[in-house]
Image 1 (spheres, rainbow, N blue to C red):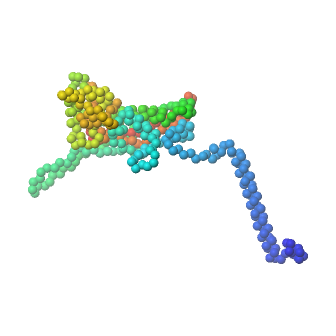
Image 2: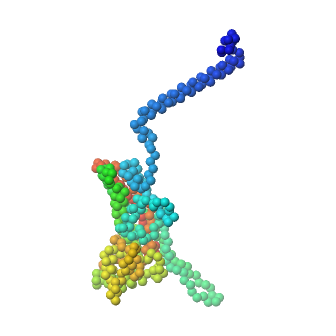
Length: 361
């Protein structure tokens, strides 16, 4: 424009085209700058308006690393439901020892009130659909066969299938909000103790003496009778009775790992007093960590077993892993703030689905 003015002339066609093109580019850049300025002003207004509720608009990512964190998160109402899994620690695990999880704490407590979850074979499934297990009833037999004589057939026999379902054991425990908000309360230990005792006693009792109707088929209910004590002394067993019971089991079964005794505290005390004909106690207490021995087989104390008495199955002997326990899923813990809202109590619900039976009686 300056050049055309100095020469006192109009723009040429080429100059006019360049001038219009530069004007269009400048207008485009100006419009873009205005748009960016408007965006910045709008973002500043939004940030100012939401600064006080930024945590709700953009919640910070939370990482729950331990089961204790999960429980405390449930106590604060941030987590409503959680299923605790089971994990195995193997000798190849590296680094620091794995922290005790909530599931392990509960099962450990349950075993203190009964050994059935420790001595049995545990089958873990994700769902609760029926699970069928076969068992052998008889062996094939061989015979001497003469020359040129047809060889006879001998097939093994099988019992009817046993079916394991998934019976639900559950209970509720309530905590006051004041107890939850008290920073000195170990919520993990409290819930582990309550859940362990409630679920542990119920499950162990069902797996021991269940009636196979609305309970598991308990190991005592399913097992065959191997020996009977005298009725003249109110069913008190003798050392000879225990020997007869041990040797009522097949010799091959007695050599299997996991064979042992099971009885309650009262029966265990009675066993410790028994002596042989030479006056020596037949009971051998463990000298180190491990189970006491009776006739060279380990003894497991089970509070769900009946005490000695007429008509009572007070002592169990056999291959204890032959009893199968089916666990559907893990231990589930749920929280509700509404169940006891009027009392300002937080309710926790623990649920475990199990069943058990003895395929080989």
